[in-house]
Length: 393
Image 1: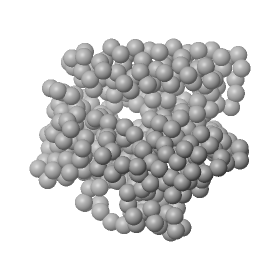
Image 2: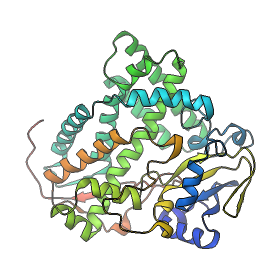
Image 3: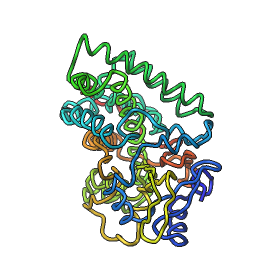
Image 4: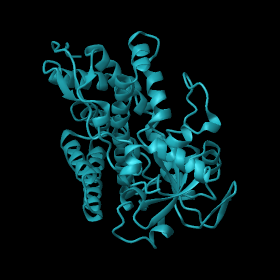
């Protein structure tokens, strides 16, 4: 299965089922032309891999040394001095600094930031009766929230956003690398400013770990948090909204009070998580998982979307948070509490203000970005009854 093909992008769940039927829990795939990997589609196999980081390290440098420099999958897979792409003691240093910084996020202050931003964005669209809820709401709301959490000034926020959009639209590896270097430069400026004027934000708290991380390493941790946190968060908002708008039972239960917004979010994390295929590892020696022989250095990618819907663990999902959408093992997402607050408040505010939202095109006409790793809409066009602006929070 080519994870970059239209067949996969248009109907990934059928592709996962086909791979599981033919290959079992581990399937051979390509993440780019001529770049093989193994995709984990079984829940139990994923748990085994998450629990064995020594056998399945996340450091890609040996694999990368034999991969063509222009490989389009490199922006998501290549080595960086950050917690996602490291193993052993190096990973522990990065991870400890990140978790210490994220654990002190004031979730009540974050909730207020999201509420204020949501009201401002809703007031920009409420009279029009139509909007693209991805570009007009989910994306700018998430960026505003992440800027506040990380401690980015408006100027730094503009720089990082421009770099992220350049990276998202990059047509070759050189453009992607240039965008990432722009992000590193911007985060260095942020750290320099926080040295002079620290605040209650992640950048300032990272600086308190200067004995463990160099300034370059701190900049890369901020880039990682920005890139790996913001896009999945705005896509989770959009994917949850889409489920509400297209599943009659889902939306009816929600608006009727039988389903909480948090339950809706968890249902989407099971069925259509914004990071569909991730948690990449690179075995240092051949491995056997079940009855499958995994070659050394060939990437092993956990399909969070496929594992969550594995028939081997099927059952009632309401109120169940056993999904793997946040990853697992030592690389489990450390920012899930903050991301959940952003998504939950964004949805609550929007549904309270505009309860009659409906898709403005048939669901079959919506398009998904061709991406082996993310499950992301290109747009979410909707209509709703025109409404007066909300009071400013």
